[in-house]
Amino acid sequence: MKKKRRISIRIDMTPMVDIAFLLLIFYMSTTQFKPPETKAVKLPSSHSQISLPDKDIINVTVTKDDSIFVDYIVKKMVNIDGNDVSMPTRIYDEASTVDVASKINAARIRNPRAFLVIKADKESSYGTLEGIMKTMQEQNLSRFQIVTNVERDI
Image (tube, rainbow, N blue to C red; front, top):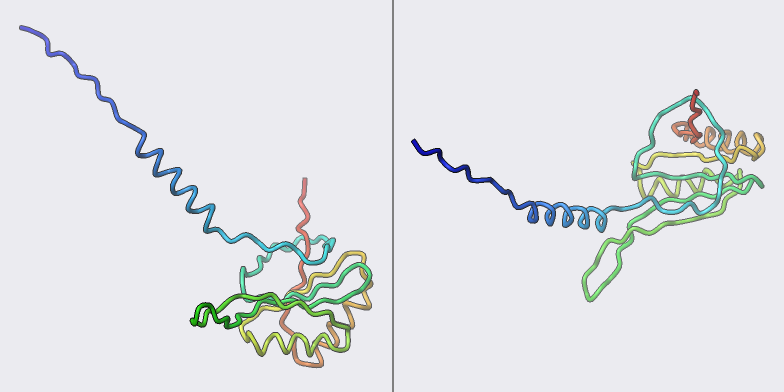
C-alpha cells in the first residue's frame, strides 16, 4: 500500500497584519490626548487613589506664587459654511480668593454637571487655599476634590 503524501498547510498572514496596522493607525489618529497644562503645578503627595472624570471638569489652579486660575471647557456654536457646529473651547480666567466663587458659578451655569477640581502647588501658601475654600463654602459650593500625586510605597 502506498503512503499518502502529506500536503503542508501554509497560512498567509499578510491580510491579518494589514488589518492590525490599519486598526493601529485608526486608533492613533482618533485618540484624544490630554491637553497640556496651562500652568506648571507641583502637586503635593497623598495615599488617596480616587480617579477624576475625563470630561466636565472645572479646574481651579493655584500656582506657587499664589495666583489663582479657573479653566473649563464649554461648547460654542460656530458657523462653518452655513452650518452651525458645536466646538469645544477652553475658557481660562485669572481670579482672586474673593471672586473665585463667582467664576466657578459662571462655569457651573454653562455646565451644571461639571465636577470641581482644585490643583494647588505644594509650595503655595495654605492661606490661599483656605481662602478659596471659605469663599466656596459661603457660596454653597461644598463638593470639590483636591488633586494630589499618589505616594508609592517601595
